[in-house]
Length: 180
Image (cartoon, rainbow, N blue to C red; front, side, top):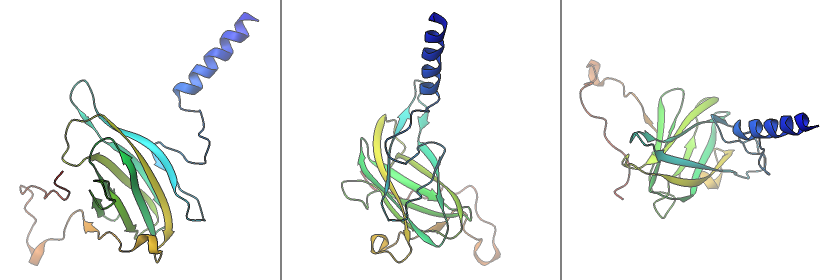
């Protein structure tokens, strides 16, 4: 009898450590996030951006699914630091925002170009050393939804070489973001 109590306690601890405690609503936070709501209701989850004891910056990184040719609306609804959101398509298009959600919160309204998993990165807008929590809503909508107007304009991760010239790989990448 004592062994079964210890086994149950060990199983519960293992489940907790592996993150097997399910949330009350059907959303999953982890390496891949899939919003399957057909009724335009956002999937809400919490996350953290942090700096560890070695002073390594650790942004929040996850992959978000889209069927392509739809709007992927990513809205930070609360944040403990000034965040910037970056979403990358498998084709190299990049959507980035710092303050469009008001109160220094990022808001992406990305009209996706292909079906697949899009990496999402949330970090302090200038890469500062921070430890901060946030809450985010992700919604998949028709590309014509009023919630996606105006859409966030994408840019290419690797711009094509201009007039046949090779790109200057020593030039720094411009920072797109806010000032606060």
